[in-house]
Length: 241
Image (cartoon, rainbow, N blue to C red):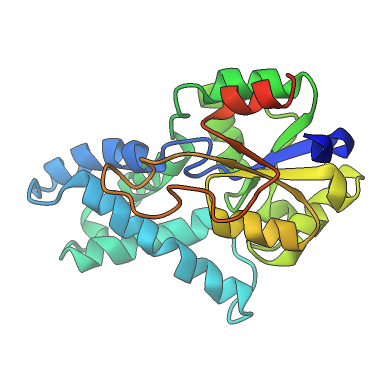
C-alpha cells in the first residue's frame, strides 16, 4: 500500500458507495404511490426510473446546455418527469408532498458497515464526500445517519459534476493538497477512472446490490486500482486504520 503513504485525504462517492439509494427512495415512494392508488407501480422500479434520469440531467450542465444547477433541483425536475411517465400529474400530489418526496435523497441509509468503517478511516485521514449531491442534501443525510465527515465537499463546492476533471482537481485544491495526496473511494469504475486520470489515488469498494439483486455493472474492479476492498471496514484494515 505504498501508494497511500502520501495520501492525506479520502473522498467518497456517496450514492451507492456510502448509502443505499435504491432502498431508501423506494421506502419513501411506497406510501406516496399507495395513497395515489397506484399499487401497480413497484416502488423499487420507481426508484430505478428516477435514478435513470440522473446522468442525463447532469449532462445538460456538464455540456454547458444549462448553467450548473444543484442536484436537489435536478432531482425535483426528474421526479416530476417520472410521475408523468407513469401517468401521474405532479400537481396531484401538491407542492408540499412533492418537496417531501424529493427529500427522500436526504434520508438515505448507509450500508451496514459504512459508518463504523468511516469512523476508523477518519482516525488517519481527512474524510469527505466527493458527491454530485449538493451541500444541503449531504449535510442532512450525514446528520440523520451519523456519517462522520470532516467536511462537506463535492459538485456544488467545485461547481462541476463528476466525471468532469474540475470536480476532482478543485476538491484537492480546496483541501490545500496535491491531487496525488487525495484518494477517491467509490463503487463505480467509471468514477475511479476519471479520478485516476486527474492524478488521484483510487480505491474500489464492492457494492454488488446497489441496483438490486440483478445488478450487472461494477461487480468487479475493471482496472488495477490502488486498493480493492469488500467494504469500508476492509478498506480501513488495509490502510492501517
